[in-house]
Length: 388
Ligand code: F3S
Image (cartoon, rainbow, N blue to C red; front, top):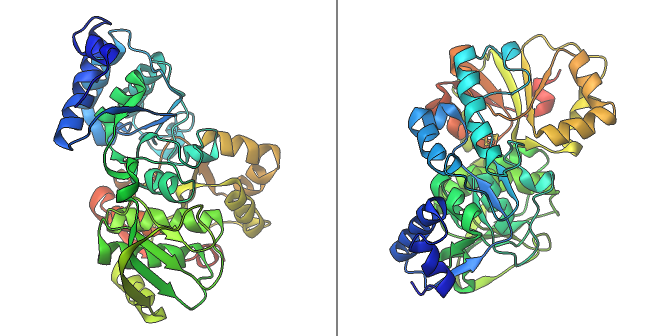
């Protein structure tokens, strides 16, 4: 990879150990993927934040940077952690787990990183614009940034995002290059998708079928931003989709010369629903994967008005989104029903398996990870089926 004089100086250690380590990591990555150079980025979303996922080895890795005084050089946000930092006791998290999680977040914040832990950074201030290059981890955030916002990022991991945050650059390959951003599948859906769950099922069906390819959709009606969020997250989980287009919805719609057509029938989604569902009797109800938007919280509060939930109902969102929802009165209505709004964490990266063995979700992505990552039997259902 071709380095500028300043980049070479950093690599030679002339700007300190932390920057040198970060540069070594980016250069190694660039060499592996055949990048020609490093390019400046507008923001970073750091992956590998939950103690459940990274363990003690992860803490040691972050400390290598944090304890040598490393600071980030671009706006940087964090992925969900393993527990709600304020309500950890109420959700059955052990003190040891909380302390380890706090240590991780403190290490990150000492580097100048915002402490908000969310997979929807684009809803709370870290929202890149069309054409911006960024370095993001977390597959649902990545696919949203590339597709719904028209930014450019690869599916990064924990170490590469830390390195990019310190240097402010990323190797130029993959989705940073226009030639890799053309759809090779054209997906036609000519029936109504009415619910967030329907978009999750469609994402699961297409992700499973096309894996890491780029799909372009022709849908019957224009989806909302929350529906696009659900569709992308499910495709990223069931396949490894990092970019998609929806005609008349996403800011770009770029097809390659030869596209393969896929026609989706309603039965395909019904089959997907059957395949995902492994129980009809759950202990825990969840929503907010990816983290719920303000609009989703408003909708949930309307559905929960004057109701009492019989089972635990945990709603995941970003702390800043919850604060705004609180100002609008949604939080009070939701909590009055017995439901909990949890921040900083999610049902996959938190140890819910220590308390529950079966969970309902309206998310295609959550349904994919619940069995393996959180040892849950799964019921995928609409919010209107959870809240009766
Ligand atoms: Fe977000 Fe966790 Fe789902 S990170 S997308 S809520 S699995």
